[in-house]
Structure formats: structure tokens, C-alpha cells
Length: 198
Image (cartoon, rainbow, N blue to C red; front, side, top):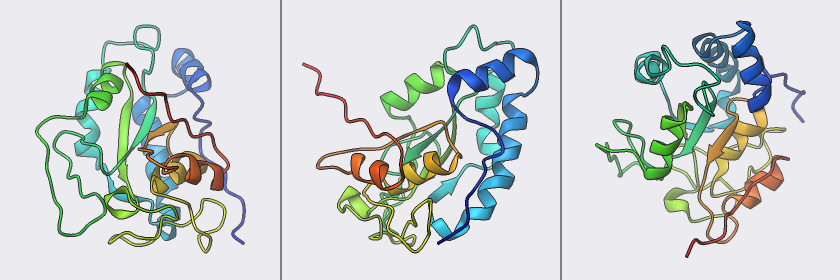
């Protein structure tokens, strides 16, 4: 078993916004701390693409002149399962033969960005989102947040591990037959599958 882990900052949204309002933390400072922290967990294979400082700079600049009171998700870091588009960042669906660089983000991502949230990376998954253990990826198996030798669950493996380890306040996943709820359960977090609209 691996030892416990301590994230550099509590990432629940109310706490983050309190820190931002008090001047005790800025979104840029938070991302710098997360950079250092996430580097200690490369054995989890949770990221397919962790955004570089240059790649996330536009999202930070979009917050300039704004405040936690003007945007509901101001400076909130989130992760994106790598079958969901983020403009300009490759989507691979965890398969080495797929490399789509979208010219538009998925609708849900656009809504989160408009609310002030900041993407930190694209997360590992069972390739093509087909699998329930998180090990079927061309980018390596995704290890459990509490022990890298245990399965993380799938297919939204990296998204669950990112939240469980405290690298993102929340993460986007997909769920057809448990792909979001299974890894959430195995990493001791909550996974929601919203009902179909209609």
C-alpha cells in the first residue's frame, strides 16, 4: 500500500473562493502548486495530456479583471476525460492511433470555461471508453489513488484519480454502464450520472 497523500490546497469550491477573496491565493499560484504536486504521482498514469503553463495561460488571462463574485467557478481547476474535446489540445480516446486536435471545445467544456473554471489536463481512460477497470489504455494502466498497484476502475479512470488525489476540484467523465460511477467508488469520491434531458 502507498502512504497517504496531502494535496497542497483543499480544492472544494467554497474553500477556494474564500482563499481567492481574501487574497491568500491566486489561480496562477494554485496551478503552480498543483504542477509540483502532480509530478509526484506519475506512477498513476492519470494524465494523457497535462496542460503546460503556455496552454493554460489563456484561461488565466480570461480571469484578469474578474473576481470570485463575478464568476461561479472562478479559478476552479477541473480535469477532462480524453474523449471530450478541449480546443487546441489533442483528443486520443487513449489510443495511440487517434490524434484529433479540435478547433472547438465540447459544449460542457465551453460552459465551464465561461463560468471561470480552468482545465488542468486530459485524463486517461479505458480506450474508446470501453472497460471498467482503467487498465486498457495505450498510455498505460491508471493506478488507484490510494495504491497504484490496485485498479482505478474505468473507463473514466484518470478523472476519478485526479479528483481523489486533489489535483482537480471535479472532473468530466462519461458513463454508459458505470464508466464514471465505478472509478468514483473505487477511489472514494462521488460520481454522478445525470438523467437524460428530454
